Each structure stands twice: as C-alpha cells, then as structure tokens.
Image (tube, rainbow, N blue to C red; front, top):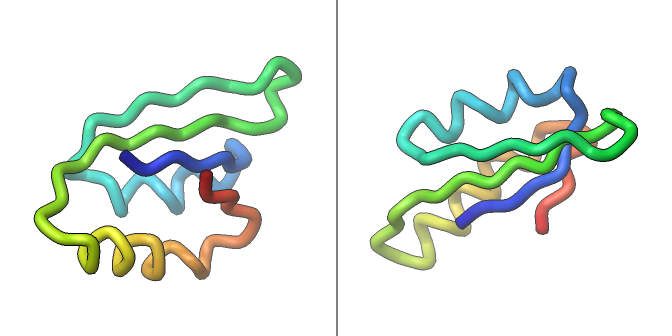
Length: 64
C-alpha cells in the first residue's frame, strides 16, 4: 500500500503511476490537500522502492 499527501493540482501527475492500483482519495478538511492511497500487489521490496524513486520528481509530494 502506498500513501501520499498531495495538492489537487499535482494529483494528475501522480495518477498515471498507479494505473494498476485500487485508488482511494480523501480531501483534507480545508480542501487544500488530498490523501492518496493506492493498493498494489508487489512481488519484491525492490519493486516498491523503484516505484517510490520514480515519484521523487513530483514537487510537494509527501510520502507516508
């Protein structure tokens, strides 16, 4: 499971990396941020690490 906090504007940059996932989003109380949860089946820890690395270019992305 991958969990992030991101702004609405940057959400479109994150979505393409999780086409194979079950995605759940929830806005913050003020609507400034969005909680993003993606459930993915991974076969190795390396696969998870590589996915996190591939997202490092998205400015303002907070990984949980």
